Image 1 (cartoon, helix red, strand yellow):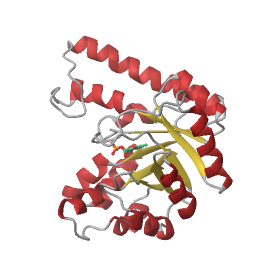
Image 2: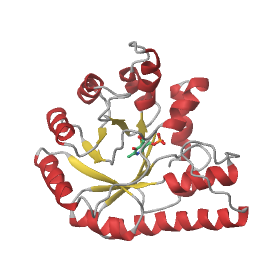
Image 3: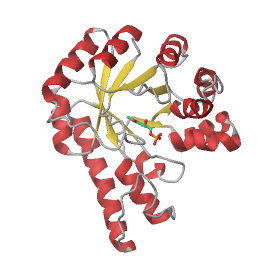
Length: 259
Ligand code: PXP
C-alpha cells in the first residue's frame, strides 16, 4: 500500500508565528528517505497554511510525486494547471471548517466537476476526487472518468476515537454523539463495511482507490487490511508525532504499519 504524507501541518506551525520556520520544503527529503511514496499538500483558498510559493517550490523540487489537494474553484484550477503536480485531488472546502469535514457533493456539482476533471487531465495531471464512501459517489466518480477516488475516513476515525481514544464529544471535529459502547461498536463496524464496500466497488469499476483523513497509529490497521485500497494519505498524526520523535521516525513508524 502506498503512503502519502500530508505536510500541511508543518506550515500550520510556521503560520503560528508568521515567519519562515519551519519550512515544509525541508520535509521532502526526510519523508522520502523514511520510505513514503508521495507528498500531499492542500492549497486552501484562504491560504491558512500552505501558500502559493510553498506549492510552487514543493512541486518543482519534490523527489516524490506531489498530490495537490484543492477546491475546484477556477483560481485553484489555474494554479494547478500552471504548477503541474503529478495528481490533483479535488476536495470540498468551507472557510469556517477546521479541516475537510466531508466528501465532495459529486451529484450536486457533477457538471462543474466534469469540466474541472477534463481541464486537469488535458494538462496530463491525474485526478482524484475526495468522496464519502458510498456506492452512489463511487459510481458518479467513475462516470467522471477520474483515475482515482480518495475515500473519506473521517467518520470511521471519529467513531474509533469515541470508542477507544477517550475523546469526549467536546472535541471540535466530533459531533455530540452520546451513545452506549455497543452501539458505537456497531456503528464503527458499519463504517468499516461502508469503506470496504465502496473501495471494492471502485476497484471493480477500474478506479484506483486511496483513503485518508483522521488516520493515526492506532486506527490505521483496519484500513490497511482492505485489499482494494492502494494508498493512504496521512498528515496530522504523523506531524504531531514528529514533534516528539522527529519526522523521520514518525514516517518510518507509519510506514511499518502501512504495508
Ligand atoms: N486526504 C485529504 C483529501 C485531506 O483533505 C486530508 C486533510 O488535509 C488528509 C488526507 C489528511 O488528513 P489528516 O491530516 O487527518 O491525516
